[in-house]
Length: 598
Image 1 (cartoon, rainbow, N blue to C red):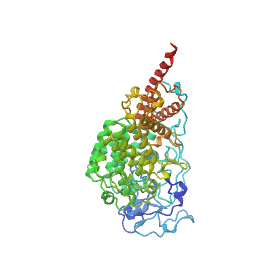
Image 2 (spheres, rainbow, N blue to C red):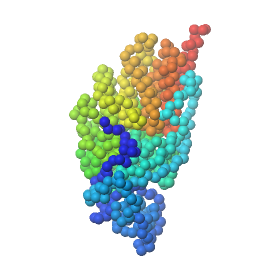
Image 3 (cartoon, rainbow, N blue to C red):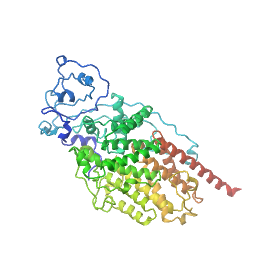
Image 4 (cartoon, helix red, strand yellow):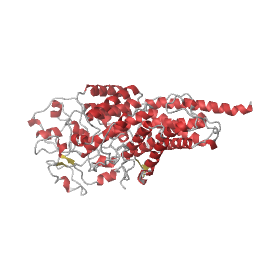
C-alpha cells in the first residue's frame, strides 16, 4: 500500500529522479543545465558590467550559463538586469565544487546521460513568519452560544490566523521545492519573508491552495516552462489566489491583472484554461457568481475547442514530460469536477461537462504526481460511469471524479432514486480499505476528503426531497427543497434516516485534525447543507430543545463557517443565513415549550 503523501524523510531517501531533455529549454550544446531552485526574480532592471570587470563566482545564473558568458553572481546579475530577464541560480555540475556531497548521494548525479537533466542538491532555506492577514468581520445576528453553548474548539477550527509557522525545512536530493512542505501545503500559511512580494504570492499559492486543487504543474516545472513560453495569465491567476491567504489588501488589483491578461490573451491553450479555472474557483469563493459562471462557460468552450477532453492532448502538448502530461489530464478533470460542484452547490443542475464525451486518462496518486513517478494512465472500461464498476483500485483523485459523475447522474435522473442509491452504495463498497478514511496515519488525503464530502452531499440531495424533515424555516437557503414533516421519531422513513446520517457525517469531517482553510472552499457549502438538515430536524416538535447531538453538530458547523469567513466571503453570507435560521428555530422551540404552561 503506497503512502498518500510522502514525508520529508521519504523524499530525502528517494533515489535520484530525472526530468527529460525537454526541460533543457533549448540550451546550446555543451551548456550545463539544471533545475532552478528558486522562483525567477521579478525585480526591476539596472545597468550591466563589462565581461572583463566580472569577478570569478562559484556559480553562474542559468541565462549566463546557457549563453557561455561570465556572470557577476549578483541576484539578479547585471546581465539579466540589463536585458530584463529572470535571473535564476542553480547548483552547477562543473567548475565550482561547492559543498562536498554526502555519502548518501548517488553517483548517478555526476554520471547522468546528456539527454537527462540531473537533480541537484537543494539546501532548504529557513523561513520566517508572515504578517497576519486581516480577519474578515463575521456579522452576527445572535450569539450561537445562547443555545448551543460555547462553540466547540476543534483543531481544525483555529482561532488564530495565520495558522501555524513553517517548521524547519529539510535538505532534499529530490527536485528543488518538490518537498512535502512547499508542495503539499506545509503546516501553515506562512511564506518566506525574504522573497519579493510577487514571489511570495506564488509561494502562498503552493503552500495554501495547491493541495485542494492540484492540477497546475508543480512549482519547479512551472518555473522552467515559464522560461519557454508566456505563462503570464496563469502566473497572474496564481498570484491572486496566493494573495488571498497572506495579503488580502492587494487581492483586488491582482484579480484585475489576472482578468486583463486572460481576456487579452489571443492564444487559446491549456495554460489559459488553467488560469481561467483558478480564477473561477476564486471568484466563486468571493461571491462573484455571475463572473464565475461566465468564465466557466468560456473555459468549457476553449477546452473543447483545443480538445483538452481527448486522450491525445496530454501527449501532444506534454513536451515529453510525464508530469506535464499528467497536469493536462488533471486540468480536464478538475474543470469537470468544478463544473459539477458549481452546478450542485448553486442548484442550477446544469453540469455541462457531464455530457461531453471524453477519453482522457484518469489521474494518478498525489505522491506519484509530485515525485514524477507517473504510471501509465488508467482508462476506465465504462466511460459513462468513469470506472464505477471496474474492479481495479483507483487513485483518490479518481474517486473524486467518480463522485462528480454521480452528481451528474442524479441531476439527469432525479426520479431514479433507487438507481442512484445503488450507484452510491456501489462506490462505497468498492473503496479499498486504505481509502475509508481521508485522515490516516497523521496525514490528510485531501482528494479523498473531497470525494467523501461529495458522496455525503449527494446522499442528502438524493434523499432529502423524499424525507419527512420540514424545511419550512430554511427556504431561503438554497440547499433546501420542499417535503412533508414527520410527526414522531418512530415514523421517520428510510430517506429521512439517510439524510440525517449524511448530515452528521459531513459535520464530522470538520473535526479532521487539519486547518479548515487548507480544504477547498466548496466544503463551506457542504457544511451549510449539513446545517439545514440539522435545523430541519431540530424544528420537529418531538426533538428536544437541548438535543446533545444537535448542539454538537451545529456548534461544529457554525464554528467552521466562522473560520471560513475569515477568508471566503461566500462563507460569511452562508454562516449569517444559518445563524439567522438557527435563531428562528430556537425562538419557535422556546415558544412551543412555554405553551403548555399557559
